[in-house]
Length: 243
Image 1 (tube, one colour):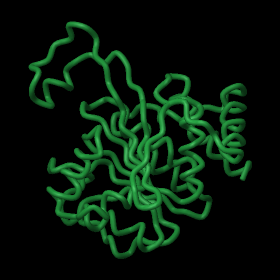
Image 2 (spheres, rainbow, N blue to C red):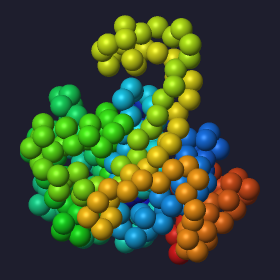
Image 3 (spheres, rainbow, N blue to C red):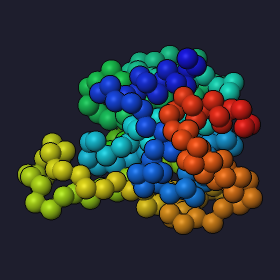
Image 4 (cartoon, helix red, strand yellow):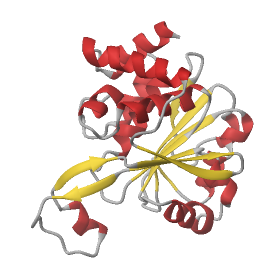
């Protein structure tokens, strides 16, 4: 088992089978075009951050599923608080379970966020989740509360917010995060994806028009859909063989 598959399994705290990008396309969390676009950016070396407000929205699932597409020579590793940040650089993909001020060993905050977000400048890449659905919410937590600055936000390169709708009448106190987590989720979708390029943040939607390279990735993903290659392990094997 390679480091990517191992890290994906470590991210699945509740013991579920890790869902792949193919699974998430089938569930309509993301579209085929969005997936092809994301894979193309990851192939080019981008880091990524996945956000949602409630728990169980699929943040970790989507963040982990995209690890399948990092380069063969990269070593994926799951970071913990007080990790040796300076040791991570080229050919490392460092995964943070969550950027959060909750006191848990794999949740990062304050100086750990500084350490994590400095890795791309040394030639590595990072992936993480956060309780946020807007860039302003991301900035508030990473740049302001953690004091890491705007460069820490842009170090991710891609921000993928997951929008959640709830079943009518599902219970909630309407205020606290705990109340929101009790609500029955009806749907989870990625409506837009934000990416940093040429000194500014840009946005794509669910019907992004693909370039030639992205079309070839779309063809690969569609062939996996049609042939039933849907586990993270099988998809990574097929992807590395394709490249």
